[in-house]
Amino acid sequence: MKKKYQGNARVKRAHLQALRTDFEALHMKPGEFLSNYFSRMMAIANKMRIHGEKMEDITIIEKILLSMTSKFNYVICSIEESSDIDALSIDELQSSLLVHEQRINHDVKEEQALQVTTNNHSLTSRGRGRG
Image (cartoon, rainbow, N blue to C red; front, side):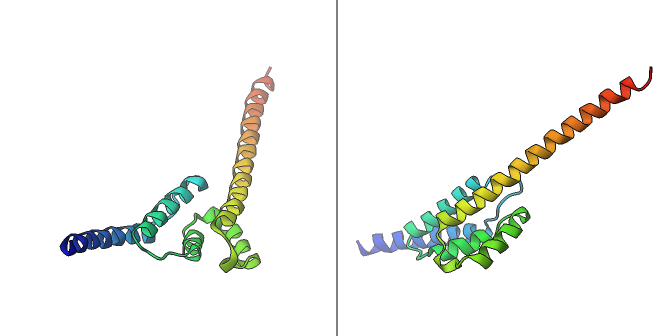
């Protein structure tokens, strides 16, 4: 029984070490949606907790804030300045960042719509001017 448990402990340690490496290397990919990134982050963090890692929410929050893409820089600065990071929950952080992501995506869609409208207008006006 003792040998069997020691084998399980070694396997558990090896899994935990691999998960720590994955956690440290985790960064948000350019163009990745925030919800997908949070899912990847929480999947690794939960596996680490299952394997015995005593990971607190503040560790996950700090990792998220450090590993976001640059388009979130100013909202991260705002969150760090206006909130007590120690009292912030992962859900609160996620909601704040999701609101920001929705605004960014809305602005990008409006900008693209304006470009399409401008391009169509310039194409039609070119043909009418010569006649």
